[in-house]
Image (cartoon, rainbow, N blue to C red):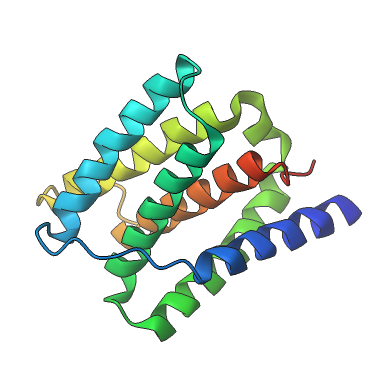
Length: 164
């Protein structure tokens, strides 16, 4: 139980630090276009990480940008809704960490998270392009919230606060 409490505290601190980050809006792109661009960025990030060419700072910045875009998309730029989404992300993350444990993320580290994030973003891209979901009990919002938490997990790894 103590291990979960340490992890939950680190997760909360990371979310709190994220909630203050402001990323400027690129008005030239729609949210869907920007998230599609982020998919390409994550694929590049994964390739660069495999070649050890990426700094932790660059990886965190890409995570923060994607977090900001997901929050903008889900909240319609409403700061109260944004706070609610982060609270939900925390609650879901703590529950899932309890069920999965912390070691599953450590098996492949950031590389494994990048794969999960790209999978979630690809699902978003396909469903937002009009494809009908066959997994009907997972809403598009849930898909983006999963991607959001994976980005937060990556920041925790980069900051050295992912505790077993």
